Length: 154
Image (cartoon, rainbow, N blue to C red):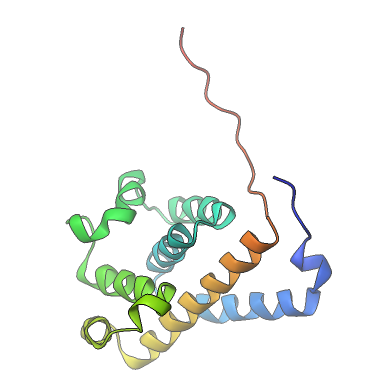
């Protein structure tokens, strides 16, 4: 893959504004581990390799286990996720697939059972932001770093 352009160079003020949104979300009080799961799940749905790479790396730095990262795509079928995480992941999927879901009342009610209004607002901003980042990185063909493969035993 060849990158089309670097958003940080081509539109520095817009990129700076997006970073400011990320900073506000980071200071909102939402758990960082939860935020990384949300970012990773939206990135999986959207197929953004750059963002998946980034948020797997960040989730692991937050102490997330490899197993939960592997199970994230099947979170509905796994007991490894808390009720709060499930509500956030359901909302993530609803908003990321908005043309299909129309943000159903049931998902919002589940969200209200686990988050207060300020948390819901910040979570919704987070989901909107990662969806924008996914579209920017996919559209502009951002390429994630590639680690050398582990040596294969003969």
